[in-house]
Length: 200
Length: 200
DNA sequence: CTGTCAAGAACGATCGTTCGTTTTACGATG
DNA sequence: CATCGTAAAACGAACGATCGTTCTTGACAG
Image 1 (cartoon, each protein chain N blue to C red):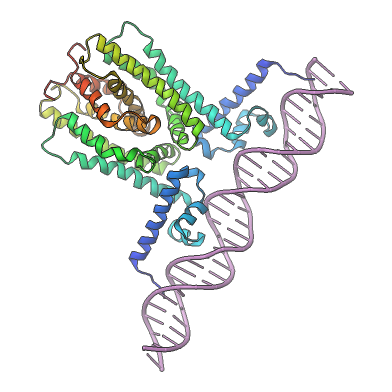
Image 2: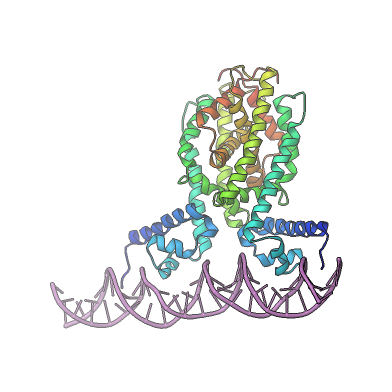
């Protein structure tokens, strides 16, 4: 019996996922047919359905990879101690994330995942879990900053973390939809706000 | 010949748009069929195609209404002088925008529009135009603040405007996907950042 | 042989849209 | 005012296309 090697099976699966990612990035989840994905992968219909139960399962798998990748990008940045100033943290973050704004990056597809998660409860829960963790990292960053005396002593780290977190997808959206501004300009805006004279 | 009143025609069109908005909010652009929209509107297939050339035209019309609404919300807030402190501007903004986070608000559908605009060039251009204008408002706000001495003299208003702008969709995303935090908490985070000790 | 894997024709469902028909509302006519 | 002719407006059965999926078939490794 032709039991094929475990590695071969995994490779096949990844081959499908890669093809799907390309198609989805090009045309979106809904406008790409199974035939598109299958042709791109150079497989047959029957082969595909050996590896995925349905199109929805494929979409979910891709979406989870995309969201997971976003999360990983942010994890890397957090893994720096001692905590540098907020501006440096955000600089690292924006620079790490910058190559992901192009058509081949994760952010254009992240937009699709966000929309999709409104109608796919499983995906919604997954997204909630990942983004909750990511925001948690920002809260930790805020806590670090507060401990270093770079935030008011009475500040709520949860609140500051939420604000810092908001800047990432907010910036991503500007980049993806408007094409502006570059990371350094954006950073200078953050710097200006952090150094606002105490008249507010 | 039954030329029906102009008002009647407009009302019919709006009736379709309302039905479409309800359906799209419930199931998304792609998962709602024409039959869904038409039934919701209580019309016949033929009647629908008298008012819209295609489903795509309907989607675009709805998307433009949604994006326009977001823009209008922000316009209202800007129309206040003399310019209050940044925190007050953002408070007004977040409170105005707060009721729009629920399932019936514009933001869940805005997510869909963002995704859709990646594959619909006409819609993309429209979105670009509107959001460009909205960001322009934030730049003006930054300029006002700078003139009032509440921002460093050498700050770039374009950059500060981009950062302030980013907080809105960034916050919207958190609210829609995570359900957190409430506007006042988020605001306290902004306040904390604005009052950061000058060690950064 | 034997059972796994790949292949792709075929299927039912459903999609968006068209189009021939019926209904409706108004202007003209007497 | 009553009637009728007519074109706009509404209707909905039907259509072709395409969708995602199933299933029969053959090839090939153990």
